[in-house]
Length: 349
Image (tube, rainbow, N blue to C red; front, top):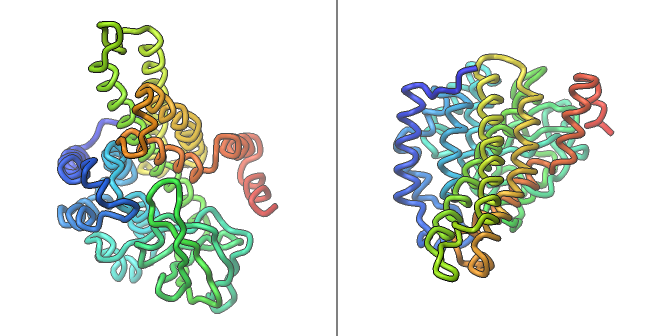
């Protein structure tokens, strides 16, 4: 395995870091409230970062999402990248790729995903879908939602054809409840597409969590290095150093497992187990890190307007979205022990 970024990945990463740093500031985020940053989204896509995802693969997307997470930038990059750009590029027909990818790349259209498969979502023989999904991230920003039906078929649905009910989450993800009532859908991919897209999304959101956690720890390090108690920085205390060191190790575990899962997919290897591994680290380790970041700020961390609190909210939301550590570990155990049949049986039950 070689996780060294290519020249293209490094260039995209440098550009993304600059844009996120310049535009996704605490002051700007405070002014946005729970709304998505449409100006930032336009800037990212105008810079070619949407199109760069196709060229740099899932590993490139993970690197970009790390930068987004560091700033908790309120844009649908993870959702549109995993459920839109990579899903269509990998599983769409030639006609679908030609028709859908340009608008997804330039950001004029946004995709998200109703994942994992929902038992109550069904598609009839004519491709009309019925059912509801309690909440879908960035659904209010999306023009397309990739719906995973009960039989693991994938259907692209235009959000204007469905009912979207606003839902407020722990983090400001412009989420919505998706209601389908004989809603027309467009089939995407065949056998194996569902497993690939689900694993890709888990890896992408784990990369986002790595950035969220890194940003939280960076703020904690800055705070404890400048805040003094009894004439010495808080960072001089052994308990503070150990808590920060534990957080750092969790972040590195999230990062390296996300890189491995992404690399395996880009190399055409089975990446399902690797995606569950990084999702588990992102859930369990991520929760520990954002709690540590807030704790190391002391009373300041309890301020709802403090930037570190935003990392806390994102970290907890990502923990919930990825499924929680116990559920992910159970799926990973079933996959290792029994392979495909056990996973499919578990999802049907």
